[in-house]
Length: 133
Image (tube, rainbow, N blue to C red; front, side, top):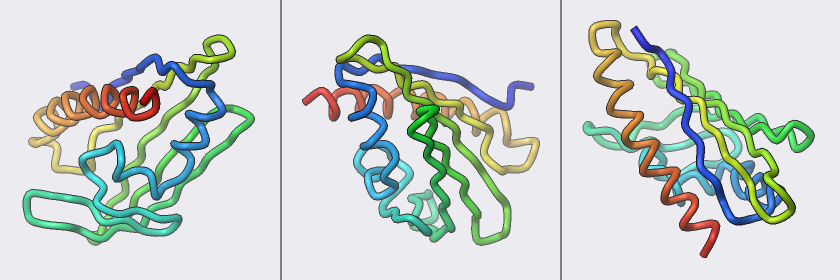
């Protein structure tokens, strides 16, 4: 059973500019479907049952180009998303994202991950469009 997916997108902007945008958690609602609001400590996630407040920790390292998010849900379960911005010449970047399976019961895992993979593909396309505009 697959428990992760890796996707990437080429963005026509310098890696530093892409990193700067992604490293600010308040930008999450601009390019993701799940976040309605985010800051350095918390976020509101959109779910079928309504908005859910979570704890959010963003770990960004300019030196390695990584931007990771650690989420703690109201029931105490934890989730994480890992990403990296890599320079592809002076004016282009590759943004890669490791999508981990959400913290759901095992019987729902494959469906949940497959659904999230499709959503992520759309979000990365939207991120590219947003940053290249």
